[in-house]
Image (cartoon, rainbow over all chains, first blue to last red; front, side, top):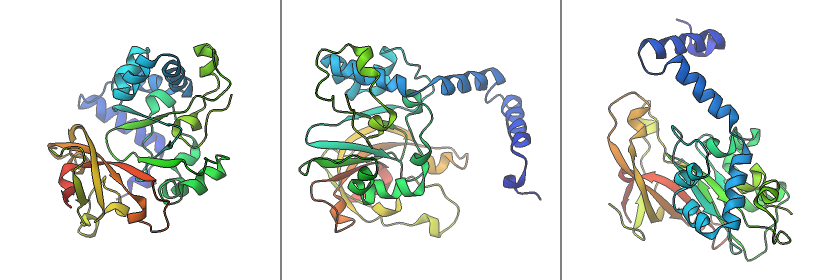
Length: 193
Length: 92
């Protein structure tokens, strides 16, 4: 018998799609819609949430309490996505996200993960040597800052609410959102004005 | 239901050694002590879902670990926060 891993990927995918439709699990339309939603997601969505949280304390509280509901409130499609949790960075605690088991990532608000997020090196070092890992991203935290590593092992997907950088006082939400990058919302970098 | 602040230990169990399985409890935490931060909700048991078996909903907790209890050279004050299912947690 041929191993699944030896079968041509396109043929395997076609067979899987046919079976999903035949068994009534997912129609071609539902699959197309899901692919479109996934393709459309990008870090710009997460950045919008971050910028709004920086400008609106009540929204910030709602975002930290229930990321899914706050994202929906901001117009982001969360239907069918795993629950979203948001963890903030504070001046005394820096937050870093990893999935040591695989590659769990908040795709609904950040899109596809960067290539290194799935690497064995990132996954191991985020928990074993977070400061060494951050240094390679050019992130050096103050000596007194503690690190909280969120290992995303199960049903939630986690995003960082980064610190608002100095020098951005009075900026409009759109301008703030434009400086927030994916790495800032994973916690490997900090937002720079 | 485990209350926030409850001290727990992760079961020192290795189902991987007994046969095919799908486990969402990282190896580096087996047998380690931690503190429950909060109950995140109830979710179908991934160990059954992965094999298309009927999956009971299990409580999922956010649990905090002191990395220095896992790797002695870790920085004091740092923490690792992990989602773990109730059946993997035992009294510390």
